[in-house]
Image 1 (cartoon, one colour):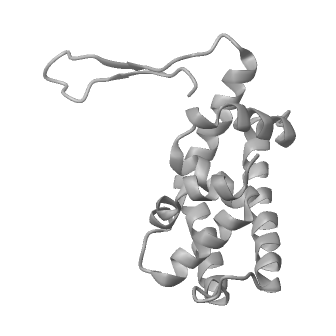
Image 2 (image 1 turned 180 degrees about the vertical axis):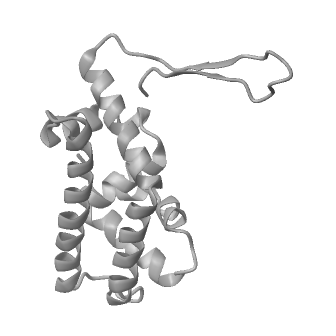
Length: 167
């Protein structure tokens, strides 16, 4: 992630200085990628984003049948709507901070650095690009709507998805 130094002094009676320093890349493209991932992490934790996501799940999870192995045509339509809503939300937020953001370039960087990206972030991004991941996420929510949205993402077995979709 982007290099950030913070001095935290929680105890005003003692002069204790805790400094957290993260790696800052010498490569401006890697640094920009790290900032973008940081923005996405912040968005995923944002209440507005979670509200939009939960509203979407409540509206459409019932359409996904856990007893049916084949895909219904409506699944594709729902996924397309999901893409429109969330790509627009994410891209608008990123472009607000990075006016020169290029989605195609970011996707290429993501593929090159996927092992460096936090699993929860990578799984979320997969719901945008991989239909089977999206479908599994919807099915997990349908089976247990009381689960936290991120718990549904964590239940996705990336190894199975990756082996079903060789790149």
